[in-house]
Image (cartoon, rainbow, N blue to C red; front, top):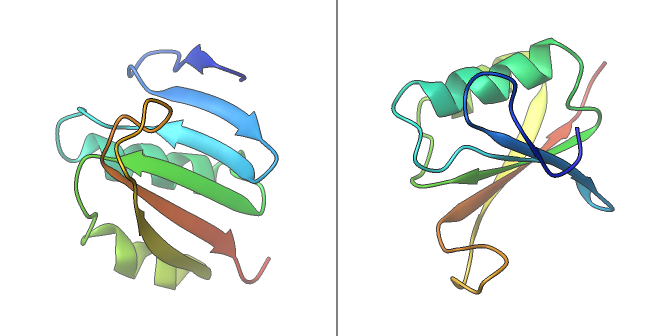
Length: 95
């Protein structure tokens, strides 16, 4: 699960000190939402999940609320490590 492509959907997953990262930039709707929820519902996300997105995921917020996750949106500066876009940091608040 480190620095590799997703098995079938073109996403990239990697583990870092700050949590599990998933890059869903460039995927057509609703794939970013589905991918994030699949990681959360499947237990792969752990306590912290960071999703790299092309746009703000407005439809994801109520789903995260329902599942007991808090979140904050971080705009990136477009440096070479982030390639622009947004990062949604999500933290589990209940088990």
